[in-house]
Length: 443
Ligand code: NDP
Ligand code: 2IT
Image (cartoon, rainbow, N blue to C red; front, side, top):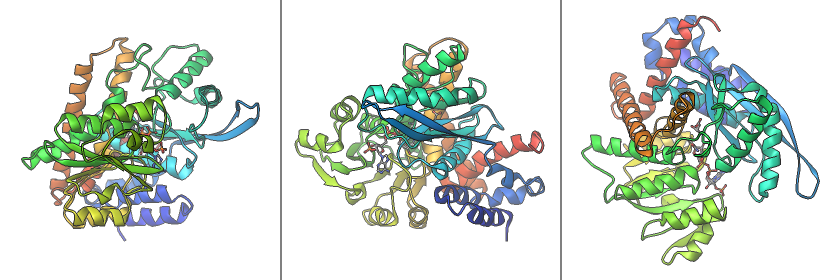
């Protein structure tokens, strides 16, 4: 048994109750053996055994009062996974499905994603099993204040810098920041994704979606192609999906689909971003409202964006949303490129099928790194108390995505698996963290 296989087996046994965490760790460890072969010293230092255990996990009670005056209680978490290359950094997710398995998988992915950006930050993730859907602004505010009342003692601009993720956008970051400032009596860049009048960075809202599309463009450019005229299917209708749609359309693509947790929309004329933002960002409505208001578009219940033939598929909603049957449909319809905007949206079986059939597959830890990269740029702007222009941030984002792409491509070549961005991203991300951990001793 190889070193990575042994650690994967230990994890599967120890964390049998944490399937998403086992999935994410198996995917990474299962692809870095070529790098481990070149570095036998890693095994002697039990590097993988240390890498898969979070440095610290904080779990706490979040009590709050709903509008009817009833007491509600949720579970809050922060997984401070790895600080080898900088302060913990990663989003907060508010969704009823949140549990330790999901946050550990997200925190683990975050370590390598951040390493790939080349920026000096570490990996973490947090959140709560709170559902912001259907709650009033006042309820969301009371929840955020209670959540931060515990979290504030564990975070800081040089310690741990949370941001948004599913269910946490500008509104939630505002309430969280307000409560942090009140408790800590410090105005510092402790959260990213802040509003533009109080320390936020231009282009942070757009960064993840734009970055994923820049990554797709970089992959296509290597093949002498571009997004111009390509049929693109996007899933999700939140922060990542919306700005992926916008950038893909700006680059000449026809974006045919978007979705939410209730259903999906096919719009043969191309998704109207203005209407999408009105329905999702302003009204916080359902995607079915888009279809009701947009002539020629069709609404379907459930999941199924893969049913519409496309050239490029970009899952931008949530983990394991693209199952094997979806991957089969994509292959049969001739889709050549899958770019993950979400974290681990493709199941392991679906990923393996796509790779086997020669579909170019870009894993989230490379393709969606634009969000956290611009978060790190927001931290830089906060430190120097300046705000850069949209164009400056966007140019840096493009440059970072290109360098992630090139590093992942080159690492895949070095491992003898050209075009395999899964191996390339995992190896390139891993080696930098491993080097830092080795230098810092057994900690
Ligand atoms: P949002 O909350 O803005 O949007 C999430 C979207 O995904 C919504 O359309 C939501 O539908 C859908 N969704 C959520 N959960 C499920 C589910 N269980 N089944 C089906 N659909 C679901 O989140 P983001 O756009 O910020 O995040 C999307 C993905 O991108 C996540 O995987 C996140 O981790 C990842 N990501 C986000 C980054 C960021 O900067 N925001 C950075 C990098 C990655 P509904 O409204 O019906 O719940
Ligand atoms: O998954 C992610 O990279 C995010 N949710 C963004 C994290 C961040 O710190 O901006």
